[in-house]
Image 1 (cartoon, rainbow, N blue to C red):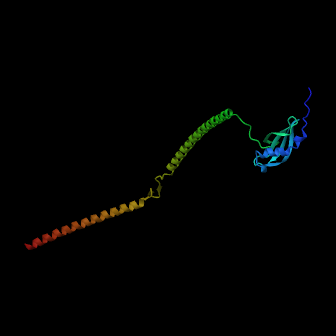
Image 2 (cartoon, rainbow, N blue to C red):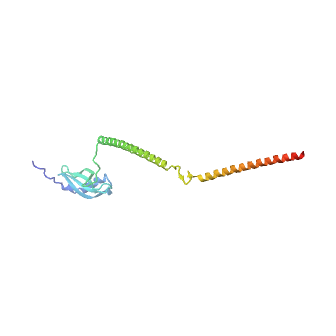
Image 3 (cartoon, rainbow, N blue to C red):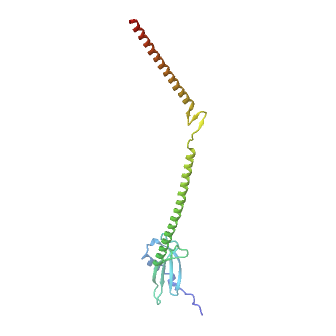
Length: 206
């Protein structure tokens, strides 16, 4: 099997830069077109002439004009377009809508499942926290019970009450009762003296 010989470009096509630039000026402003960037021989009678692009956001791309010679006529333009070169910044590979939709739905389902699992985890954590809080409250209640003041005796004191004072108060009450008894005796004595005086007065009157 014999290999196809390398194409030999027509010299007129290799020098058709003016023709190529005229075609580019019809589709893009002149300030977006840079200097010549080589050529690619597509066939014996077809050559693609390249020019650097000055468009923002298109690094590594080239304005490309394909010219050809048909039946020994003058070169003519087949097409003009912006094509990527080696190392050019390219858009992601196109993915059919049906496949993208299926991937989106799968991602949504996975996110919903992950959210449900997270809710279960949160509920478990909440239950544990509630148990911990309940234990803490029980501990605090026990501490409060332990800290409740108890009845204690301190050298005659009961719950902060001085028993000696109570005894003194009792003695005062007894003294008061004795005074009242003495006063009562004095009054009785006075009454008897008064009765004796009245009897003497009556005897004298007779």
